[in-house]
Length: 142
Image (cartoon, rainbow, N blue to C red; front, side, top):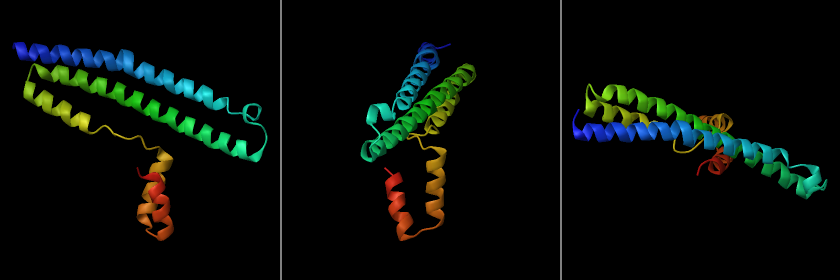
């Protein structure tokens, strides 16, 4: 094994371990904290008046969406750790192929979390272009 390959192997092992043992668990923990916080958005906190209740409802929805996004990131981290492990197995056979494969797998990871409901809305808007759908579509696109 060349010195360069040894460095690559150690770097990949560190990444895999960090994703599996540090990043993914912290993302899941943060998602859990957000879910706990979302459950605290009650009438007791915001009162029963319509204005504060409307805000509380939106705030709870936002917290839930953020928790879902963090869970998705944790899944991506765990999935990519598995890809790194596969690339490590490939490394000794063909270092260049392993690097290329891992780069390609990394490129497949979504940069922005889109919930299933949001993706369904985007797909529907694309199928039926109209002024009203274009206005709604702009709210979902960043």
